[in-house]
Image 1: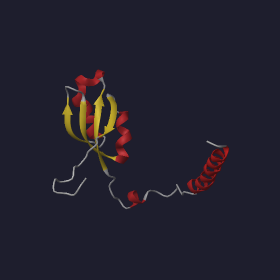
Image 2: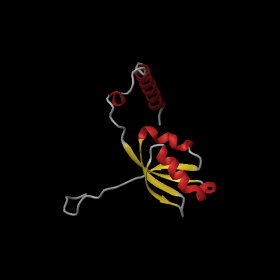
Image 3: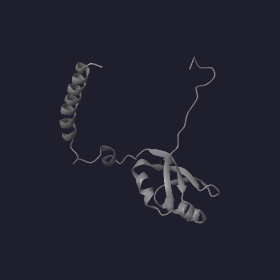
Image 4: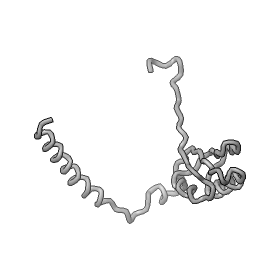
Length: 120
């Protein structure tokens, strides 16, 4: 690629930064989130929680602690060390503080269109 391409790319990048930074810095972070002011609940996300090997024998206690933290536990799969359910997005990070929690993953879902629908 020629040098004009790189000059144009550099100028474009600088322009984006110059326009974007003032917009970002002008955000008013002192006002609380409107959703919280109106009392609306945060959206729920379906998750799977992996329990570490050292706490597999205590998976029921981990499940109870997850419930106490706001998780709606749907399934506790003790043989594989996974607890599934849902929780509001604002409480998601608090699950990592529970002893025995190894990982928290969002569950993915996919819905196929009905067979009678048009070309997909």
